[in-house]
Length: 568
Image (cartoon, rainbow, N blue to C red; front, side, top):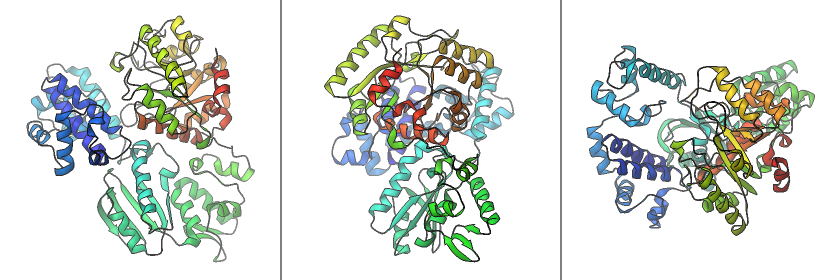
């Protein structure tokens, strides 16, 4: 979390400098903010090695600011500017379409500094009359605010919290005070968002073991501490429960605290109908425990196959487990390639070599480099000439680094449904993902026809992040997904499961809806930096939650068979 705190400060500095008209300062702060967010280790460790200058965007002035924050917990320049602009940039920027200058105009004209103030101004219709705003802008801001507020209690995209959660688990494991530490709850089910963290543990000395959690850098405060349960606030912004469990009941507790609630209710009812009782302490018949040490024995005693955590949503998995009809869902270890990767040649932060090197370290056999096409100006999209130069670099790097990097593109579907690049350059690509980013209509048929035209072009391998949603920020596009799935099946076009934490797109329920249509799925990290390559795990989790088997996910193919499949 230290990295994220520092990155947020530089992001706010970038916003303020943009408001002040300092373009180059704003760009510099924006760049270093992104670099720090993408680091694979705590920046304090990098500082201890005197290697801050190796971070992209860090020069003398920014290095001094980083060191000041590490040593003093503050940056003087930031404190001074915040006195002038006492604005909650972090939360206001969560609203779709709210950039720094709009935020500044609302502050200057109406004194709005935060979400409640903005909501009050919208309710009293004070925004439409401001210069440069108008009724349409007020309506758009209101819609964006409704999306944000409808999210309910604080929930965090799994991919944004996962690193810290695993960091807590690893910290507790390394302490030597625990015999067993297991993360349960919605994290274990790999839900797209989480509201809290559940950790179950066994230990010889519960007091000393509990001290390890409360003293960790991940914790901002203790909520309550009892003999067998500790609740703490995490710097992530959510709470964490650590429960100490007896070894003989560990499986029952893990099954119970993994959830989901609906799954557990159904399981308990099955136990009752079988003359037994199931709770977090075990499975009992006539007050005698008949199972509890492991989850597997509980499911077995209830007459069903073991159910993977990702499937436990009470959507037919229990009935399938009783019949022996559960699918052999795709395994995390089966993924051989990443089919959606960006480099700094468009809007990424790392070089081609850096992305390939990290991919190899992560155990990948191949990856597709899919920089944006020229129509997406905001992402520094490439034209034909730049793509040809890029493709030469990919071929050279593949040979030099002994890795299978493939030539690809994330291709804009234009307003009329035509493709952003011509046939000749597209036929030179190994793999083409098409996507909607711009000109989104409120008319379902208009959006759908654009996607269908791309699918039928004969030039596209897959459709990237098909629904277009941004979790907590933008609703899915209005699309006839059944028609899109049908045409993908007819034309042999894949649908992507995008692992970016804020996209998680396709959602698992739509994946499951599409799985029996005959189409195949691609998994992509949508990585824009080396740490983003780990997003492939979240794409795989969605595939598992969508009941996909390995044969339905093309990333499970070895390189030679993958190449054969995508040859057009």
